[in-house]
Amino acid sequence: MPNPPLAETIDLAADTLATLRQASTATIATLLFKRGYQNAYVQGVLPLAADGATMVGPAYTLRYIPTRPDTDPLDAFREPDHPQRVAVEECPEGAVLVMDCRQDASAASAGSILLTRCQMRGVAGVVSDGGVRDAAGAAALDMPVFAAKPSAPTNLTKHHAVDIGLPIACGGVAVYPGDILLGDADGVMVIPRHLADEIAGETVEMELFEAFVLEQVESGASIRGLYPPTAPKTLDDFAAWKAKREA
Image (cartoon, rainbow, N blue to C red; front, side, top):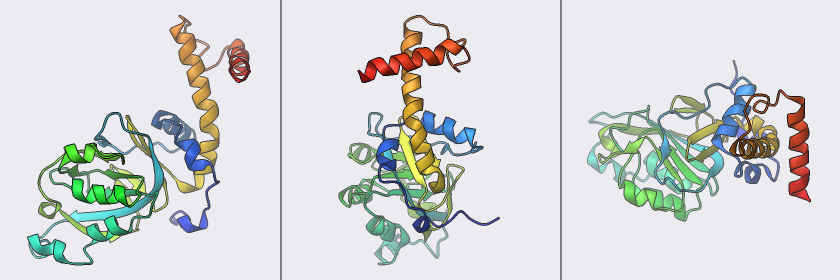
């Protein structure tokens, strides 16, 4: 089977990213599930800052393989073309740096200095299924950082950076360059780029309906017939609720 179309062949609508920024990972998970995408949630990854902003942006990918003594001596970072350093310096503004560490968090994939550099360059966020060192400093950034856990050892002890801008796996999910990453307190979802406009267009109504349902439940309503809206009256009540909000 072929890979998805290249990101540069799929333009996003002007308001897609802004619309997705108002959505939750739960909403995205449901909308993708309806389309048959059951493996789009990055496993084992959570935000370092629990109260951080929602992260949305296209994926810029970096892949690590296991280290060897001949490829990862301590002075490896002196190499000007070291892929980890290159990725930090070249990840586009507004993109999300996504790192494939094979779900091995026994060493860091980056630390607060490199992550601060990403923030200063306008990167929208960083996602790693490995560890992050200097985690307190990374968590204090304005830029969202998602990782498996804090991990003090340098990446050179476990992770050898090899590829930039190629398809990777992160937390057990396929991530193609340009896919849209959305992260919040529940974790990170990967939206195939060719579905991003369509998914974004459905989030507004879905988020509104769930707000309506929650209000009804808080008022004592049963979820039977309400969620999902199998009772005919539910959608009528929802329409009236929306009209009142818009008045």
